[in-house]
Image (spheres, rainbow over the protein chains, first blue to last red):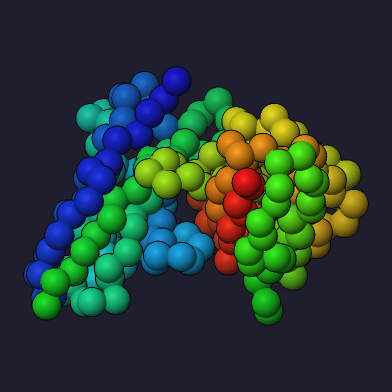
Length: 111
Length: 114
């Protein structure tokens, strides 16, 4: 089946920029979702990319290359509140309801 | 709007006990989902529903049952609890089919089976 791979953990400094990568098989997905999940809380939606390229939303941007099976989430001007797990999820073409979720990347922000 | 609410927040069950996890949404969403989240793993879909009276299995349905008698409510039933069902359970809803529509998650139920 389709798998999604993300780094388990990353550390970055307050005020800096960090890029969280997500890779999958190129036979791929209709699109890629990114969700943010603070410890002990529910995931919340950040972005959905269905077209190749970069989409920017304030301090957060998400990029998709369907031909390369690659997506990333770019966080700028990091704040302590950005410490969370970031979940990547793919939308398979053969199933409208079952997202394939990565295990998430735990992002630790240091002052 | 309260969004998606789940009860209880925490529960400890003994092996073989049963329980129902409640989920309610007030956004008039047709689509509802139950996930489990285990440490270090991605969310796994247990069951989903595309409207009142319609449910279907997800990736990991064994040991669980659901019903959807109203648009608002989507309870998850655990029969004969097993330690493997120790997990965090999230209910979610979306306006329409998955593609391009965000899912709204409830706060989760942390279940321990001992």
